[in-house]
Length: 231
Image (cartoon, rainbow, N blue to C red; front, side):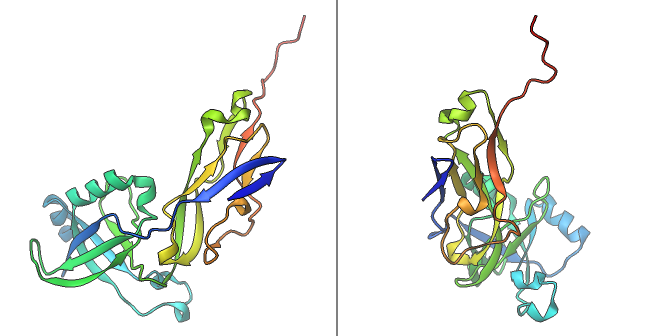
C-alpha cells in the first residue's frame, strides 16, 4: 500500500485482520459482585471480568443493543501468559475465543463466543471484554507500529522522530479488526510526515477522526537553542 508524500514513497499497511484466534480464554461465572468478592478472587489467583455488547455503551438509549452481559472470573496465570505471547500493545486489538464453564476445572461448557478487548489499569485487577461476533460493528483503538527507523534519511541528518498518534480509532466489523497498523518511515526526510488518510485499510473500516489530515508521525528538524555567535 503506497502513498506519495513530497515525492517519497511511504509504505503504510495494516497487519492482516485476525483470521484465527491465538488463545482460548477460560472463564467461570460469578454469581455475586462487590469489592469483597473481587478481593477474594484476586487472593485466589483469579481476575474479576465482565463481558458485554459494546452497544451497551451507546449514549443514546435508542441505539443500545439488547443486553448480553456476563460477570466472570479468569485465571491470572492464563491472562499473564496470553499477554506475554500476544504483547500488551496488541492485546486490546486481538480477538480471542472465550469458553465459559460451569466452574473451576469443570468440563461443562455454558457458552462459547469471541471476546475482543481488554481495558487494564496498572496491575491487572479487572478485565472488561466485548463480544465480537462476526458481523458485529465495533469501535476499536488499533496500535500503530513504526518500522524502518534505522534507515530513515531524516534521522541520519540529525532530525528526530516524533510520534503524534500511537493508535487510531476505527469502526469496523469484528472479523476485519487488524491487530496493528505498520507504518514504514524508512523513506522519510526532515519535515516529512505520515497523515491519517495515508493509511489504506479494509473498505469496511471507518476511521473515527474529525480531521483525517492530522499527522501520525513526522521527522522534525533539530534546532540549536541560543547558538553562540561566530567569532
